[in-house]
Image (cartoon, rainbow, N blue to C red):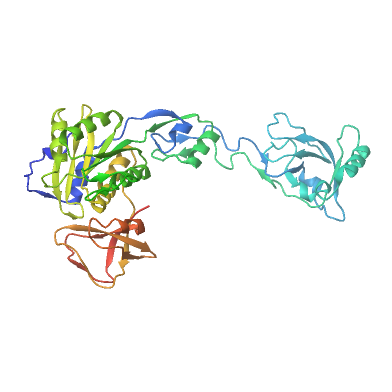
Length: 438
């Protein structure tokens, strides 16, 4: 894997958000296609267009329980002067050799059953004496009065036009149509269509396997006692959920202590089930930021490497990207502050996951919105700032402050407000770019 770590940039180079993202997307390649059974293909993206081999429905069939009739036989039918037809048989769903309907005849038909030869329409049972309290006695009388070879008679009180209550062959899709386009992510309705046209397997790019791990000796798992100086590990839970939301199969690893050997060993153990590794914490310049040490070593041992950089953004200035392990598995190292970690995931990890899936569009949707705020928003010049916000009806309102530790506001935000590098201040009413979440 060749990354921008090989570019001729100095250690003090400050990367833009776009440069860092471009480096990631130019390096990450879609996973190789595999053939999967339909139940296993949910959430995966199609590699090829899927064409329709047989029309849906494959034959004209009834959309109602009722009677299959010829239109001329029920023309002018009314409550006062019903059309009286001989019932020549029943047609149930799945019948392969339905009865023939001739002049003056009708066939009882069930929903989904094939329209019998000779019939042109279906009269709902509610329009007949069978649906108006005819009952067993009237049925016996009708059968006794029926001509030889008939199975009784039915009185029809309304006319029907040609094709009434009939689902024509090919009215859903026709043979030769494109059922689904390459790149479509398969959900329940898409899988239903594939099954309906007879596809038992499909060629897809598998859902990426993403391993998420937090680092830091201060981290405690939720539900455990919290000692002085400790905090609960929220990043691994948040990013694992975010990876699943992006379409990945995500695995969460419990917090790893600030020990380079332990972290390196943990990463090596996780490589067997990872198409992408994500770490949080330990990427800045603190004395205990052991992630750099561990990742540099585990990457260089296999001919890869992880590059640690400063980005012109807030939050999320420290970032790392590269490859580790014998298969050069891509790894993104994110900062440890909860908001920094989440924003970094949305900007960099989510697009990487979508790229591994082979999707043509990897980014969250963006729009423009009017800023509604009591006073001006200030942004550090030269940095692209991402603020949590609520977006509704073309307006966006900031939620919480700009601190990268303020995690509560994340639960109440549905968007990120983007203030570009050259905008030091945004007044109320300013039109800003908004990244829509969820």
